[in-house]
Image (cartoon, rainbow, N blue to C red):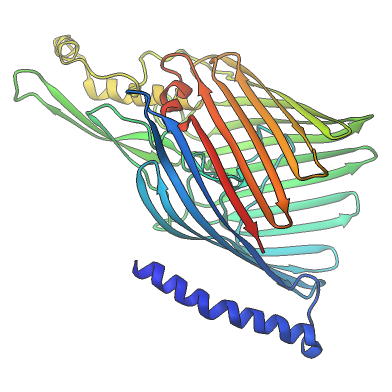
Length: 464
């Protein structure tokens, strides 16, 4: 509450000051340009889902958001941008009172170059649903929001861009600290003998440097991007950090602690975008190579090659976007054990395993942890194939926008359906209603998370 009070006090002081400054600029006493502005939004929303036991309707998440954005600069030499958020409410049954500096960076422009520093969201790739070249920014995969862009998180970084010609741009980004993604498994109910340490904060106790290089080439009718990333994958793995075996009782008992652990990779990528008639075509491909081996380190995935091809088509008020994505694991080996999540350890089976000469229970748990990482990263099979489609319309002169997004993984049989309806009855006002429906076969990722991710959601937003 102390932090909340400090935030509200600062807000009451800053807004009149900023409004006064804008009045001064507009009266001719300053040098206002079109980039000097303050804006933001206030919104509220809720999520409903149906509990497995008894089928009762519950409200797992309800929230109120405030956003204040500042976009300033002289329009020629420099620019400053900041996006401050404050959320109050409940998420998955836990109280939330969270201030967040989503982005805050400064850019300085030369004749053929640009330099930026601060907290920034950078998105590589051109595909609509899957971006295998994107490794610079983490994400919040359980974001409760009416805006899908809120899943993107920023990083503290230094970025430089060079434009040697109108047809070429070269970009370099350095990320000195590590910020992990928030994984979709965080609310999963764990086996009684397992605990997971989720560290969502910025890792500052040691240097964890990452960098990315990218070149964009603009040809007649086609744009091509080449990218290279070396550093820590924003999606951390799960490591078996503590293991205890108690044999003092009649039946042995175990306890295990897992820790979210980053790992280093190299990721080479290629993406393109072009237009043929009424169709927009785009695609990506990337080869991700971890620096450590998955056989020795259970939290590290195997090498994998990903590819994506997509197209969109517009006719009148309708737009259809489709995409195919695939993955291959060159050095695939089947997992020798089942994942630890989704199964309870049978005490009788444990006693039987302990009776086998040379059996190492800790190593067995480590392999189970590695199996779950493979399940989460879709590496239980040698290859995977998925498809996605979105159908949306712009009706009532832009005031009504219905859409339906469907994604299906043919290999794992994970299905996601997301209908949404947005209504804009007035300028600056939008009302959104929709839902998320996930379904998977027994033991799959969607089977583990559908209990808390399946929902009806609605929200209202006023922009200023």
